[in-house]
Image (cartoon, rainbow, N blue to C red; front, side, top):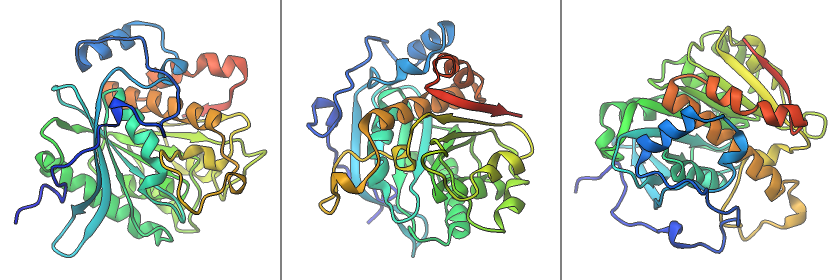
Length: 310
């Protein structure tokens, strides 16, 4: 039996209404297609807050599939397809320590509603993260060779890697290993040890680090990423955000208790809006200049702080 990268033809139309989706509303924009949306956004003032509501496009969700990386490697994955017929970017999202693809379900759905196909994967969630980075690079290479295995509308020149915590380090390692992608977005990335600087020095693709507030939620060696990546790297922080705000489930796990998490829906939505601005910017222009302009208002108001880039 042939596999479509392990994705059976089954789907859940969350766009039709899902009680577990936060009531952030839907953007008032009504573009006819993704090209019209792109042209509108790029010719109007960039503002990160416009990405807080869900985007204008319906989303098709293929859950709990297997990405067949080789005859012996099956990667658990969820696929979120944006409705427009035109070719579009693909964001590949990787979790951090002790997490899974489920922890990025809302982010992946949100990106797809804004015209960016998304693939959330689960890799060994206790590492080793160098190996996970190399696996991520191989996933990107497979999709670049055979985009139709995911969807014919995937634009192989606009693949974006997104990683949270140690998953952010894995994204950086994938970039250093030559992953054929447009660049990476790091969600409050954490350092993985003394081997990481050597990888970071080799990163040549654009990188955006979206950080939590280190005064309330410090993570291991986050400063490595901006310091060791030689160029084309930018970083901002979200005031009062916790490390866990950089992930966002749709479904609450049975073992999760509200008091066990410092995450808040408000901060998670702020993170997802910053992520969407960055992914749109990279996917549509090849750099993060649009996203950087979109953060200006939030920086002026104090919602974002600590902007640095080189």
